[in-house]
Amino acid sequence: MMSRAGMFRVSEGIAVDMSNRVYKLPSFHDVLEGEIFLQNLPSIVTAHALDPQKGERILDMCAAPGGKTTAIAMLMKDEEEVVAVDRSHNKVLVIQKLAAEMGLNCITAFKLDALKAVWQRNDSDITTDLCCSEEIDGVTIQSSDLLGSHVEKNSSIIMEGMSAEKSGKESVSNEKANERTYVSKADIRKNIRRIRNGSGRNQCNGGRVQNSKGFSPNSFDRVLLDAPCSALGLRPRLFAGEDTIESLRNHAKYQRRMFDQAVQLARPGGIIVYSTCTINPGENEALVRYALDRYTFLSLVPQHPRIGGPGLVGHCEFPDGYIEEWLRPGEEELVQRFDPSSPHDTIGFFIAKFIVGPKDAQFGKSCASS
Ligand SMILES: C[S@@+](CC[C@H](N)C(=O)[O-])C[C@H]1O[C@@H](n2cnc3c(N)ncnc32)[C@H](O)[C@@H]1O
Image (cartoon, rainbow, N blue to C red):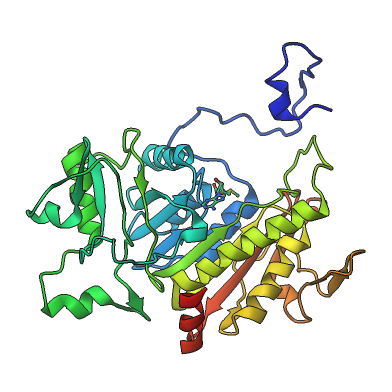
């Protein structure tokens, strides 16, 4: 059988015209644009499991095309801030377009490699207190410029660590309030949009994508890591069998590195939700085991709503001797595993929700050296 990508490269072949619908649901393509956006049930459950609260700052680490980002923004009633990042320039445009179509203003989308999502400040960084900049017509405007100071000619777009660092619920910007007039980053962003778009228009950037250098540790209340994965839960699946044990393990390694970043970015007391659309336990239960064993200040917490089934307890021993550890008894009911063969008839999916306890000093040191 030919791969989907292969189909577009050949000039002849046999195609199958699907004339019978599998589902009775009519197509919503281009219908009620901006009003509805169809999503798989587990995707919507993921946004609810994250449970964003009023006043919080949320990070969606692998956000494109923006289905969960927009669901989160709606749960937040389009208030506060949802930061959506993806490593692909074009996909960030897709997030912006979706947010604009849906009239959601609280979403800020950036191009950023989630493996480098924690801002590593170095000497060459521009040390502005309000550290954001944006290109408008080939000119980079530092955030402070929007308050009336200098404009710097520069063809690159740089978004530096966006956030004021938070410790618990306290924002560093509040601590600095006595030193200078504080202007919130939300206000700065609104100003940028107003200058560029005129008032009243939403955040469609007209083809421009902001790069981010990453974010300060502990700067988000909740982090969603909807990780790139082997996608073994997607249905219908015409092509199967291309994955090898090695490729599946590579996915797992990649996801752990991203999770390491998520742990640094979520503040103590904050929440991390990890999800995938695969049924491979190596990318699901084994990630949870890694997370709980490596970061002793993380704990699994119950999710609402709970529609998926329990996770897998135990371990798997591979022919090469590798032992993959899954959940321990008692942990299985705290995650959601969506089985595509279950009566819910969903795609295969997995959701785990962690609460971040106090991070010990040792954690800070090992992060700095890693
Ligand atoms: C499972 S999809 C996310 C789906 C999205 N959360 C939604 O609900 O619409 C995974 C995304 O991760 C992005 N991605 C892969 N590697 C990445 C990286 N290193 N940094 C940031 N994004 C990455 C891909 O471009 C892809 O858009």
